[in-house]
Image (cartoon, rainbow, N blue to C red; front, side):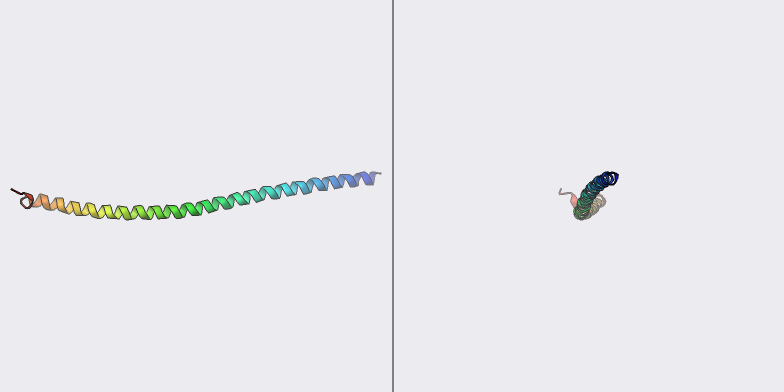
Length: 87
């Protein structure tokens, strides 16, 4: 009788262990999926950010060239005011 009761207990323990193992595997699977989603998001974010920064850099370069041109024009106007007087 004791051997039989022990067998049931072992079966129950094995069943509990198997259930816990499946739950752990499911948890690990969810964690892995969420890590993959985070990784994909970060890759997309990096790509988008690089493109936006490149566009901003081009605009800054254009503004810097315009500013340099304006500085030269102001410098010329200051040095030669007679060139800009219409009277």
